[in-house]
Length: 155
Image: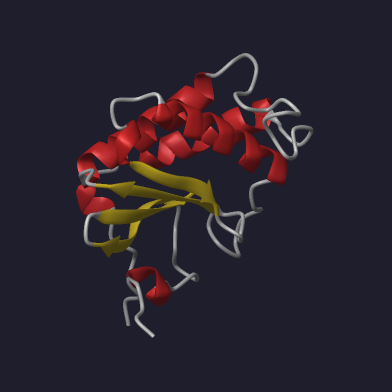
């Protein structure tokens, strides 16, 4: 079985940040790690759900909408995967920063959260999503392409 860089993650040393998870031709998967695995309380389902709705809506309304394939939560509830096509690392990082800034400042009706648009419209928490976004922004404020590599164990 072909392994990806994320298959070699040492979760004992993984910190919060944005990491390059996988590259397949012109498709790039980013690991948006908002919580330190096995060391911090994970994201709540309601915060994840709200972040997902607002992030997706934001990026789908940018000039890069055609370059976005997927944004969705990790099963571990420690972050999200963001999949792009033909979009540079620099643009992707800036788009992630902009989306989380948008979430942290968002007020109003959560996009796509009505009963006819969402399969679980009752499980949202905007204040919590905003707080998680603000905390994550502090981590990624100065993140660059050079920071995308997963941390390695210093053996």
